[in-house]
Length: 299
Image (cartoon, rainbow, N blue to C red):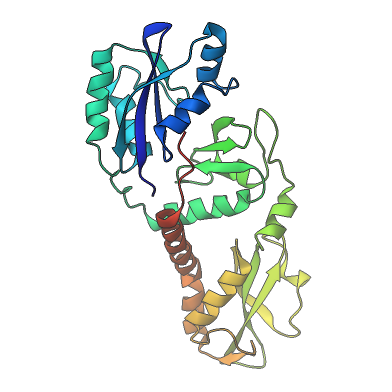
């Protein structure tokens, strides 16, 4: 996390008009940009009035984004959701000072509350299904089927919907970006089925079969000779699932994937644990990703 500055700009056209911003560069550099970029609101004000913004004051802060959120939480604009970069408001200087005092003393943001494993696992599952589609998940996924989560496309549109719909290929409701064929997504994430196999002539032996493709396809689509499907699990990541099930059977990959001598009840117990262990491993990986994810460049 980069430290930076929280700054306040004033404009000669209105003594109560303030621009609040954050940057990891120098406030003077950002001031020059605001006065020359006419595509943004600050620049349009310069163009319309013929007067430039002035730097009133700035303060170093260890966590610019957190300082900015604390600033606005102190003002009467706290109820305005998703400011979308609009940081220019008419306020009294007393209101600005009060918010600045809170922001300067905010320090580092508190760590996010620990989420249950299934929340991290669902979140990672949807993130993987969004890769390369121009859609980002905002926040967590607490339920894929019945709950709702926030999404944002690269064109800046934000909406709230059931994660399952976006995960299965529905794109942005405004511009359509990210729309994808469900079969393409299944192929991309290597979804498939993992089978616990038994053989009528080899009691005491089991094997593992995997098949890539649409979840729920009939096991007859994949052939293992005389070996029969005794149990199966639909999985999002077939490669990971196969690795974990062999680990649970105490035969970690890599090995020749030949049948192993194992009591059926022990193999069935390992198979029952598969989804839970997968969920835990995916959740731990999502926690690590969350810990090291870089924040976007402050404005």
